[in-house]
Image (tube, rainbow, N blue to C red; front, side, top):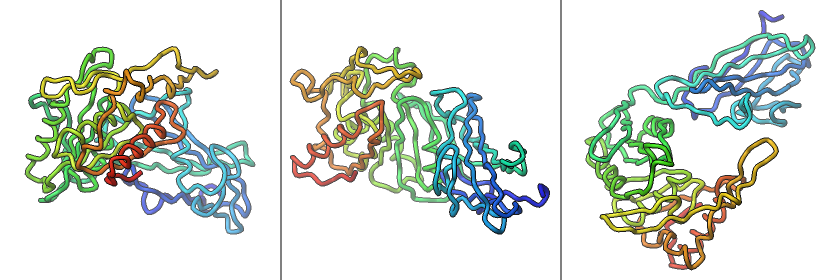
Length: 348
């Protein structure tokens, strides 16, 4: 039977990292019980895996777009469940994919539940983080330390500044694959402990650099950011007129962690945190959601970024289950602030 069993990844086994795939198994026995597994190793050598148990139909087929998982990493119909439910073999490890020129490799396999988990068939999924023809160019110019990704073709293309808290390229490479000229820069090029202050001028320099690229056709620049970088993107939108759009993901509405300077002047002191409010779980995870000082208190009002002054558009994205930031509360505060100033330049 094993030689007839096939595991298919449709439309193809090689795809972009953000593309969905359809997982189908054929050649099984009628109503046969099998477990489908996925396994991968990240760039730091950490193994991630998932599994789901299915019962084949009368024709001996399993289709993850149609059939419910009976048990495992998830239950119910979840076409991409084997990917989103992957967890590290060592608890609390974070998936790391820094080498964007190398595909992320996931191995799918089918196991016979009635034969002690015997492997029946397997296939490899190569998930690319950079498309054909996209160029990757490290940039060290002035105060810019980043990587420029440019799509193939003459353009013109819209420009995006991808600001990450620490060095990261995967989002930028995928955006370039979708037709954006993207410069990715980090808030912290060194360790967090070695950063004493931040200068918005460095990021404005990155905005100007992007606008000067020959394939860029947009008048302004969009910014995408998450975590600490999210509040820095709010400052960019507020004080740099060339920033026409900001995607803010799971961050704060005030300047966090380090004082922020612009044109040699302090524009926002730092909203700090209280480490005594960190909650440690039994498994050793740290919940920092409630550690930030109150940004609305009198002594912290100067940390709040006056986003009502921004001319561009905001997209706010907050995870209500976020245990690092009180993201939903900060988003609600920003929405209320914009409405209070009769602004409607936002979506969330």
